[in-house]
Amino acid sequence: MTRPFGIVIHGGAGTILKSKMTPEKEACIIETLTEALYVGFTVLQKGHGALGAVRKAVNVMENSPLFNAGRGAVFTHDGLNEQDATIMDGFTGQAGAVAGVRRIANPIDLAARVMSDSPHVLLIGEGAERFATEHGFKLVDKEYFYTDQRWEQLQAALTREKETSDRKGDLALSEDDKHGTVGAVALDKHGCLAAATSSGGMTNKRFGRVGDSACVGAGTFADKQCAVSTTGHGEFFMRGVLAYDIAARMRYGGMSLEEAAGASVRENLTDRKGTGGLIAIDKDGNIALPFNTEGMYRGYLMSAGEPVVKIFKE
Image 1 (cartoon, rainbow, N blue to C red):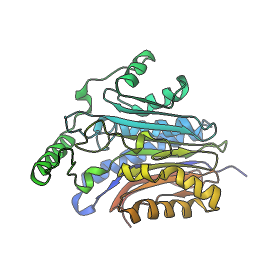
Image 2 (image 1 turned 180 degrees about the vertical axis):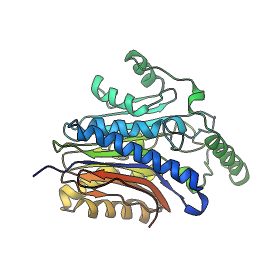
Image 3 (image 1 turned 90 degrees about the vertical axis):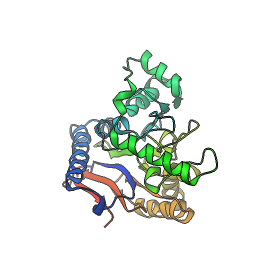
Image 4 (image 1 turned 30 degrees about the vertical axis):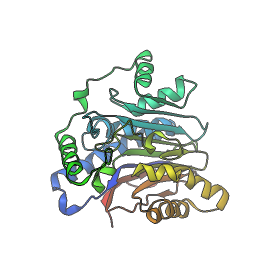
């Protein structure tokens, strides 16, 4: 029998309502998610590894201004774009991550280079960018990341902050401003798994805040049994070590992927008043895409089927 293979992606979760989305924007989002699926799936179809597939799929979403990663990243309180990313190889257990980088067009590529060309797992800020230049990465100007939509979101958050917060550092965020990440998980023809996550973080974030997208085990995890990438209010994912929690429930509790993913979202997010979702795939090609928000940009393409892309809660 032919071993199953395939890829699952997400482009963020949050208050995503059909009533608030134009048909034109919906079509653009579906088109970009579909492109990401095909780009990653083609890598797998050619017999290459899951690690390359998730990186290439994430690149497509990082390059699109529609998502909170790469070109469409949100702004910090100081009007900057600070991005986090992690990639993990389930076969070897190796991982690479970057946090707070400001001039890297595709943070997931730098995370992959940290994994392959350094003895470390996580590099941050200026040090990560210095590592990048030493390894041939071109730094981009800050204008590369600018979009009107993200700038307007920051101005709205700053206005809310002035109107509602007396405490310095209170983010005063809307629920939608707490979400936004892109990610991919894949199973290749050789039975190997990988996961990748990239994010611009939270609108109006301060003090060098780093989210779960830069934390192995919280926002991204892969081993020989499953691969997970998350999206949502990162602090909850970090406190619950949510991506790893799914693997632990499977390994030590004997749960299926669907059971483990559902239980983790319920207990680590919903019961704790956190919001978001995740994508996951296991070594047998089973997938899970649970979330507790109004919508999550998501899709999958498996070797035995056609591409599926969805946005809203069903």
